[in-house]
Structures are given as C-alpha cells and as structure tokens.
Image (cartoon, rainbow, N blue to C red; front, top):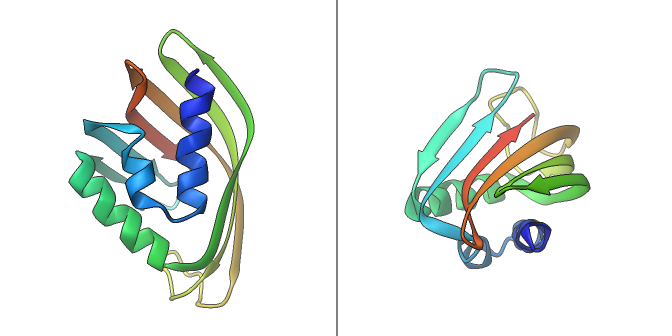
Length: 123
C-alpha cells in the first residue's frame, strides 16, 4: 500500500502532473530537498510544494525519476532513486541549458493515513 502511493507520486512527477502529485500528500506536507551542493530547501504545505514543483518542472525540458528499490514499513519508506533530466535553463549548480543530468539519490517518505506527510529527497 505505501509503495502504491509512492509509485503514483513518482508517476505524476514524471508526467508533470502537479495536481496528481498533490493528491498524494496531506495539506501540511513537509517537502525537503537536501543536496550535497548546498542547495537545500525545506517547504511546508501543498501550496508551497506546488510552486516549487512548477519551477523545478520548468527547469527541465525532460525529466524522469525511476525507483530502483523501496523499503517500507511502520508508516515510513525509503527509496533508491535514479534521476535523468535535460536542463531547459542554466541551473544554479553549474549545469547549462541543454546538458543532461544523471544522478542517483534517495528519497524518504512518511505517511499519515494513506497520504504522504513528509518527502525528503537527497542527492
């Protein structure tokens, strides 16, 4: 069941379906993106998450996450993620428009009922 919500969330992310992503989370969701380049972000609430999802979606002409492995239990889950995207604009981390980005990372999820209450992406 937890894996199904994560799969739905990632599918909506890949489809750039922001409303679908928001359907997977609670109203006061915590979203964190922790980067080893120091570009970390922490947001609270669906509205803030929607704004960042739109901005980050526009930063790539193509983007895709693929879940490699999920470990889930007791209202929490961890997933190994592969990301590939083509930058549409110059990014703050030095990636230039037109360049392809490939990386592996991990995402951690917490649930409240059947919805995601916290998403923390590490790359």
